[in-house]
Image (tube, rainbow, N blue to C red; front, side):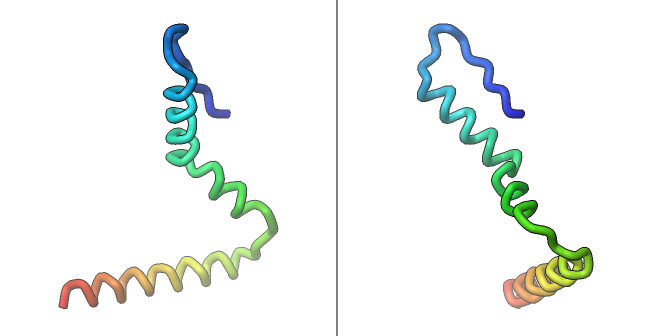
Length: 64
């Protein structure tokens, strides 16, 4: 649970901005989307390997 402590004289806009930043940095939305449905372990592993290959190819192309 995200908790934002604000002082009595702080504006609500600042607190909302802090909440949004904290929400984005903790990747809560991504976790909710990932857990929306079940994915098999083999599928997750396959996606991670594909992502790693893409990153490696991208880095190689940047070096050249």
